[in-house]
Image (cartoon, rainbow, N blue to C red):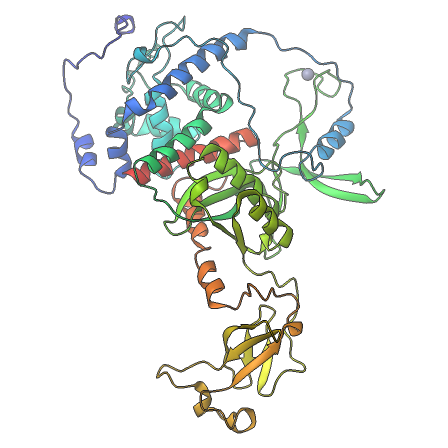
Length: 525
Ligand SMILES: [Zn+2]
């Protein structure tokens, strides 16, 4: 009987080599990159992770049998709702802005690294032999590599319907009899359990950082002196309710919040002693720049703009958090996990959400990093009154337009006179646009090099004369900022899906981690 194959501590050489024609075709197909990545998977690099997984599985199996303490709780549903509202990161400033996973620690590690390799699972776990870590791990990253959401139902579907995929992951397609065999394709429940253990014990996260580090060590990610950041949203798999509350100043307010629930199976949940919890912690209302509102989860993304490489994506504790608040803690977290990157970085780019003098000072004081944010005009209007002759308007970002419709070139500032200097641009023949302009006679009849204009600093009070947004240097640096949007597109659309299938921030963080693992494997291939 097959399920009584003796446990081997070394790798059994295959006695029969079965060649599947489809698999061979996939091997040679450039579009099926997922196949060659999974086939040439460097399993030795993942040995530590495999060992941690089997230890976690053992720990999980024991702790499942232990009863949870019941906490006496007399809270009504509405009291629970209010308590949870005031515990959100957008209500309580002492709560960290970025989601912190409380990873479960393993009590007694039992598995030795020598006892694991693909197809060889440790024997000390008691009961049935566990499913192979490598095969399960490859199934999840493989789903992402093919562009599917790395979630259990999807993985189960792929394994059952795509035999080449199942084989390259390391499973042996099932026979019709339903007896458990550790090499056969696992049930949905086993796949869910694997994902749950990898999430709860922080193994997805740990591996994510290792993938990035590996790419740095192998020179696939090169040194770069800038970081770029942004946030992005994913649609939540939950509904919300509007909760009315009284703020500390006594004002009546409303806020959308996840519905609340209890994680128990008691019949009378309204009155049992278990605590109320948010059904989807972390979800919140995200307001887009066009005013559109989305019920979702928010992630902060950091990357290297010149190479266009994402380094991390982290869940924001409460999706309703303002974008400007996530950058500082995220850069801090990145440097903690990838200290080798810290000395590279001299500047960080962000959109106008971080155009804030205090935040810029904090970056400089704490890390010696210049924070460069797109200019936020703060709803200022263009200036059209009291302008120098021939000028039509100055935009809120300091761009000067003349009555001939040309945008003047910004040349610099004269600090001894507190003035900005502009000059008419040249046309494609390197001749001043003024030479052919109808307004030349009234505007600058004497000029030979075209109209020159100076504007007092006072006319543009919101602009920092040291670092004005209309300067070429500023514009050239900010040209690199949108590269973060391409990173986000890659993570959200090419490698997964922006509609979540699970609730809660732990699952959301795991989702981001799984996507990043696949992303960094692809960079290597
Ligand atoms: Zn209960």
